[in-house]
Amino acid sequence: DVGLSLRKAQTYGVSVYRSSLGVFASSYGIYIDLASNTSYVLFADGTPGNGMFDSGETLESQTLPSGYRIEQVCVTPTSGAETCAGTRIDIAFSRPDPDAQIRAGGLATLYSGARIVLRSPQGDLRSVIVESSGQITVH
Image (cartoon, rainbow, N blue to C red; front, side, top):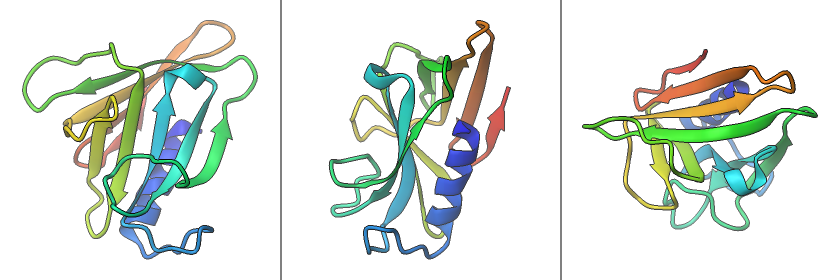
């Protein structure tokens, strides 16, 4: 579901989509905060168009199926190793490029990759990986 929501945000961001908020947003994305590790938000980035979720930008709030949770959010800087210490991640897509704008911790710094780790009720781990090129994969 998380991978599909990312693809939906990418499609909305690349095409001209008028949100239920009545706006043609500058970008669309998903916002994850580990404080609420059983849900995430699909958002339409409004003014000023910072590529991050702000209050009032919610398109859809998604709840994971019972027993599933978001275990970690990890980011990879343009140079260096992956870091999984954060609690917030914003991944947005803007026209005309399918590229992902990946930010962590509510800061404007852009990252080259992100990994969202999910845990099933049986304890299995799966990762949704997003590259800055816009590639989205599930492992």
